[in-house]
Image 1 (cartoon, rainbow, N blue to C red):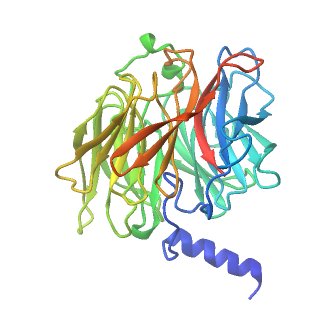
Image 2: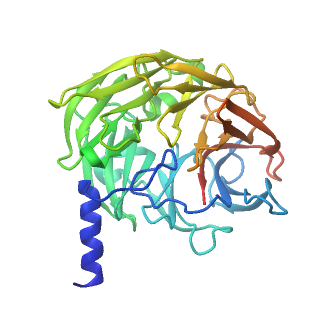
Length: 402
């Protein structure tokens, strides 16, 4: 059999859930190749804070023992400003990053394999969702040889949101429309071993482009959708608290539940499936104010939630879904937001910008927490200051390790 045919069969098998995927380097798509070594580079997706200079990707040296450990060693200029660079994600082979933008309707495809220390932009997709009638690309989610993108808006900046699938070269090949009565979109997550996908809901461009005080909080979604992943059909519509954001399936093989953080409800919710194929959602616990990001420990025991408005990160023990317990709390600084937990579950990198329309501080940074059996501990020796660039401060949002 030809090599191309073998690769194709492997990709199909993976998509159907017949191939066991690697343990979580939380919270990447299960189809992404995992690191087989400690991280060397931390990529930080940055917005120029005053939108007067170009946005960029910062490379931080995180190789232990390196002379430049904890320092920014390279900046990849993205060539344009005002993009509102936000989430980004690896392709399945981990050779490229797809960088989303919430204001510019632009996707940057970045090569991180040729020279991981000095990534380069190899393609820019202008209005990638236009062919499907979508805008505001938010979540890039790797499939075998493909990227699934969630879009927060219709082409005119309103509703409905939706999803689309692209080849890794940027060619759109499939549109996934949301049901008419659940038009809000946000995140997406897939659990291949049980053939399920979940999507969540936020708000749309014409609303989130406004300063926080002028956003209409009645125009946010409060639904989770459970999908048959292979058939691309919705199996269940679940009501939650306001603005369910991140979708995190349980990492244990064969389980049929997952978690989301409801930003406008200050809570964590769990969705659960039964053997007869029915799904329900319930509040798991109350959190600090405005839970903005949600991460997992690789052993599936803990959830980490960043509480943007109460300046804390909470670590919840969810080993007993009927009795979740707050295990530890960390105060890393003002408005903690995005987190990235390493594959060994021992370290967590943290940034503190949510949206340029929502940030309430101009002190932007990347920090590191050590995750110990007793809980989270801030590493006082690691502090990346994002305010001292030649162009002024930058808002660091999403992160990836390489």
